[in-house]
Image 1 (cartoon, one colour):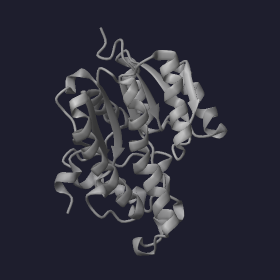
Image 2 (tube, one colour):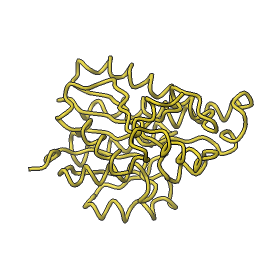
Image 3 (tube, helix red, strand yellow):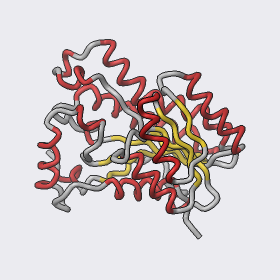
Length: 255
């Protein structure tokens, strides 16, 4: 029997087959989970739908996480089709490319607010609408990065948004623990994804990881998927409010 046999959940954030969320989806599917997926717009639907269908998914829904109504519509549909869910994967983040390129002191009010809304507040909104579908408990996992706790050149406003995301994980975990709902984050090292292309000097960050991490290499999409699978499964029933680093130990050696 698979580790996730009989469990159902939704994944927000797959953009293409190089997405961290896709690595998580593959691991969950192989472990026996039934998955639902969301996509932002028609352009992304053309990428997401074939991937979701390749894993046997029958629930593939539009969702702009900047809209409470659209988030609510996703969970309403999940309730109608499944009744309950066991897990949520939040792998969504966004900041305007221009905000990442300019010095952090020059971040605009609008750009700052947008990064916080999409990258951090969306976790709170998803959790709120997921709660009624988790009467027996469940697990929620989000994606963060080292830039939340250290100043990483070129990460700028996104680092601050990720710091807010990590704080949200702790507050949600403390609130929802009595309901047997666990909330954790996976802090992945630099991986070549569509989102990473907007971060300045990204290739330099990859080289730094390879030189300085104890493993002397970057981590893979599959490795992040396996760590997320652990947190979403019953193997981690005693783990909540944690930031789980999957970065080759770079956080240990970074200065």
